[in-house]
Image (tube, rainbow, N blue to C red):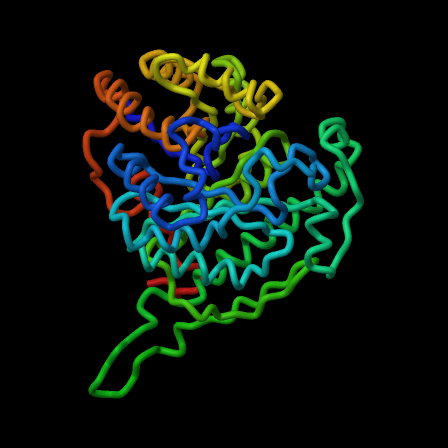
Length: 393
């Protein structure tokens, strides 16, 4: 049996907006390094492939288009790249994949940040680029404006031009970042004391990227990352994001709600991949999970505290680890390579993932018993890319 890949998506007190009120939650510690270090240690104890960290340019909100004024839910978060950097020193095997925006963040800054994280972790870094289309986000920067558009306009296609432009810009940003990672050849640093040469200047390259929204000359200030190209992941729900992932990413997160839905989505992703060069996308399914005895009752109690039934773009699973293991293996038959699980409440549901779900999968021969690879790309079966600027041997 092919082993599944498992990742966990960390966000605040958990993905349920009322999770901070769970009896095992640690709401007073959400902005402390120890909280995140403890979560990472638990995930690494469970042999998970990697962690992702959410980020955004606006405080959390129940509204699509701006703040909602609520004070009974978690508001505020730490910078995802800085959280991952802090965890580099207290983890040894698990991958760390922060989120940043491609819309208002300079590709040069992203490139050196993720490259630095890859050096700090000896090859365990990744990146999740995401677009930021809200007018309220743009107002933080004052460089450009966006029209107000709703989630309904996105779903009906009324905002197709805006969405297409955002993802086109995101693809340009990823391309610029990838070129910057390659702007130093692997052997550019010489460190030859006898000749006094530290670097071979001929092995640093201008990338001369020109896009509709920015241009980047290069080279980077950070040597090529240990992975060559750190892992790039993307969340996608429809054709345009699938095409972005096929053009720019190594892993795509999708949100099926059944095995048949998973098969249909995998087919759509593979269709979007036509013309892609290199390795096929790894397809991970996202699920929100509430695990353990009384999981459904626990979710209902959080719903009552929050004043509304929790809903999500991803399937919400409530039940036992054995039942979830059966579901994951069923969806694997539909072409799913792995799963990014969103714990409903932290740390409770992460602990159920590592201490209940992982053993259930191991008992079925579907999950590793130890880390075998130190480098994140290698763990996912992805080769180390050649440097595009290096002369052919």
